[in-house]
Length: 402
Image (cartoon, rainbow, N blue to C red; front, top):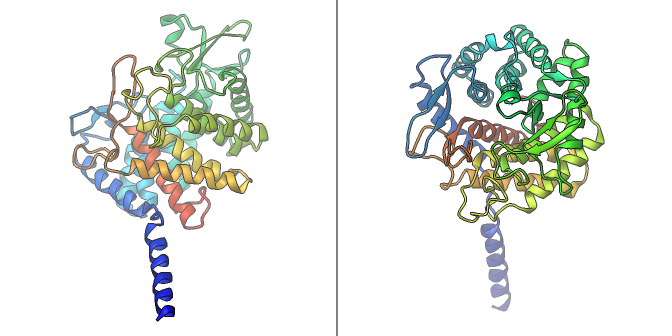
């Protein structure tokens, strides 16, 4: 009888251990949710040159923007991720049509640094999945156009030409600009001019030198003297204050330096990516979704920013694939999964409230625009992160196609 009770108790402990163990994140379930939302949204778009951008709080449908808007590439990019996940021709046809609507942007005079967002999220994913030479040609033209904003004296790409007069920022470079370097790196390796690599490398090096405080938090904007190339000041446009850590800006920085290491394999970029990731992770609230600015004095009553969490989760999954330290690999992947689990909870999924994937993102808090909204780039990086996690769970490289 004693042996019987010991056996029963042992089985009970096994049952407790099994059932209390954290359940694995069901990435396919989340991707299927994204598809269900895309099916609703696709029926309402009035034309291929109308790109979803924002759903304001309490609204249900997307606000559309023209192809010239800096966010125009995210919607086609999402459709390419849907194509990758499903391998269905209907999604490819839709992705192709919305992508080709952006064609003129590659050949116009560069109005700002955002060509990388607009064209690499769209045409970059298109070429990755199809290898269509038409897409490659447009990407190469995009890189050449973007490179015209480079100032060799400063060592960075001009971000906002309009701000030269509006704010008296002679040569301004924002932290987001790091993401646009990817199209330059890609072009240099795929038949484009070799100096495109040098431009991207120098921009990343200059940003690493000038854009960060001693504690590895980033300024949003660095203003440079166009004649001497020297740094004038660090300021913010969308953060709480010039010396605060704007959440999405730090997320762009993490994502950008992880990508730069991937493209250059220079250890200094990997080391730096980890340092700026660590300060971000250390200051997160318990649910791992940051307040829109880490230094907003209204915390804990300040709004959260799901877009920053989505960007960071995707970046951390790539970082986990690039670091050699096994403990760091586990830590970065675990943090990314926890972020995705939270974003995939009822607190952040839009459910029946609107046609986006996620709620609770912040666009431009100081201007009072896109506050607690659904925003297209949050959805893009959320789906990208889910695709990356799916590959990892299946034992594939995140750089492989599904």
